[in-house]
Amino acid sequence: MTANLLDYDLEGLAAFCERLGEKRFRAVQLFRWIHQKGASSFDEMTDLAKSLREKLGVTSNVKALDVISQHISSDGTIKWLFDVGDSNAVETVFIPEEDRGTLCISSQAGCAVGCRFCSTGHQGFSRNLKAGEIISQLWFAEHFLRKHMGCDDRVITNVVMMGMGEPLQNYSELVPALRVMLDDHGYGLSRRRVTVSTSGVVPMMDRLGQDCPAALAVSLHAPNDALRDNLVPLNRKYPIAELMQACQRYLDYAPRDFITFEYCMLNGVNDQIEHAQQLIALVRQYSKGKVWCKFNLIPFNPFPASGLTRSSAGQIQIFSKLLSDAGIVTTIRKTRGEDIDAACGQLAGDVKDRTDVGERIARQRTVMLTPMKVFNKVVKET
Image (cartoon, rainbow, N blue to C red; front, side):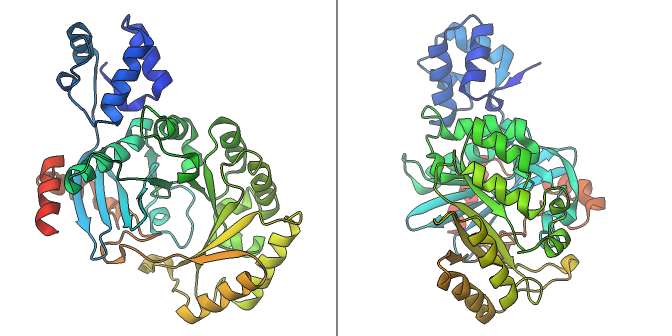
């Protein structure tokens, strides 16, 4: 069976090369060609011996996900829909800013957590992505954007595992992908600039701290168990007290000295003064006399199946001020890519009804975009 080299971190690639009778330094060369230079053909890898290139051609490939479609927002946000087979698709979003370029990556096709305010959860769960399918999103986006922008320097400075799926429920594939992102021979990203978002899979939070600590964002969304049980069903298994204790343990390994709490602002549900007061009490309960967390308030992006609406701008400001006045660092997330359904909570693989996903992907495959066609299309539109 042909091996896809995108599935391997550097250690895995070194073991693969060893099985071919090659030394470790060949794996480093190969790793750099793939991830730093974006090479997918072994013929491009000119400093590898011809005999090795021939072996690689027989035993392996560099196979990225096929791009079904791309959409460009009026604010410059780009969303790609990737085909992951078996009538499933995942979405990836690039968010350009003056001082950074952030890529939001999916870890699963669908999601099993089922948060009320997230359209991905309403899609249902299909399967975990392999490590190569996770890293393929970064591989494609980084090298496409370099061509698009006409530069050789790194374009993507930050990665957030906040796309489709719960990353920590795909732990065995997530960690190798993170290691590729962090490796100096790969993408060389700082641990502070790679963020894993979780709805609170407590045992895996502990493992991540030990195995591959990255910045951590926790989807909190409620100040008490009764409300969070309703909004984030996983809370019934790992209630807030257990989640807070896991956050405290993670701080011993985290590259940042704080945890980010994501809080989706839902009109009349979790945005009242009493909710802010309960959050303040919760933070103080675990503060140990120091600042240990910050809050990111997210204006809800409505979709019909949720039955929820967005808090008013005024109510969000009041809520933010209450937290800030209590000494809690609080930001309000700027909504990006809303006109192409690329904003937080909107990713659903372009699938609103799973019964017709196969037909829709088959239809879109007839106009599937190769990387160069995507490049030409973006250049034309911009």
